Every structure is written in structure tokens, then in C-alpha cells.
Image 1 (cartoon, helix red, strand yellow):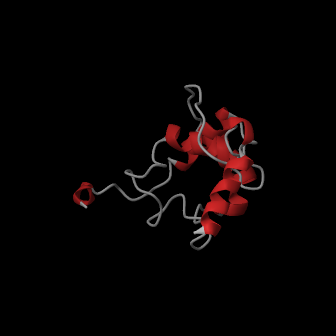
Image 2: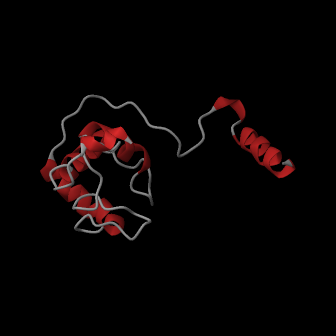
Amino acid sequence: MTALVVYIESLSRQNDGGAEPSGRGLVELPALSGNPQRGGAIFAAQCAACDGSKGKGVGSTIPPLWGPESFNGGAGMYGIENMAVFVVRHMPPRSPGSLTPQQAFDVSSYIHTKPRPKYNPAFDKY
């Protein structure tokens, strides 16, 4: 119990002044339209190194972005705007926050042109 209290107190000290801890949360983006063609070029240059050129991801560490094992229409990443908000803040992992909001919308538009599983509303019961 002492170790847990010390750990929690250390988290508070890291956030002196009320600033949001780095790498946490999402941002509000302006209403933009993505361009899948530009997004494909950005994906190839900035994303494919980690996500694979075919969006398959890497094992359980980096999940696939499209294909039968990717997220479905009920996931939090579904929807261009939802994904863009995450991408602009956290991607690419080696340089998070380096993409502009427009680039994030473009990449998200590109990814959303790819096939993925449909959401099954039967899972709403669980």
C-alpha cells in the first residue's frame, strides 16, 4: 500500500502547475475535409514504417488499420474525424504531433478508404 501511495504522489509532482501530462488526451480540430490521395502519400512516408505498407500492423503491438482483423464500424477509431484527432496528437510514434491537422485528416481519409469489418449490432447486448 505504501508503494502505491508513493507512486500516486509521484504522478502529482510530475504535473506541477496543472499542465496536462504529455502524451495524454486529444485535441479539438477545425472542420476539415481529408484527401485520400494526399493521405496515401503521407501514409507511405510517415506511417508505413510502423503500420506496414498494407496496413497490417505488427503482431499485437501495432494493430492492423484495415483488413479483416482491423477495427470495425463500432470502434472509437472509426470515422475520419475521430481518427484524425488521435493521429494529430499521437502519430507517428517516433515524432508525435508532427503532422498538421490537414495531414491527419488526409491520412485518416486514406485509411478509411480501405476495407474493414462491419459493425455487428448483435454485440450491443453484451
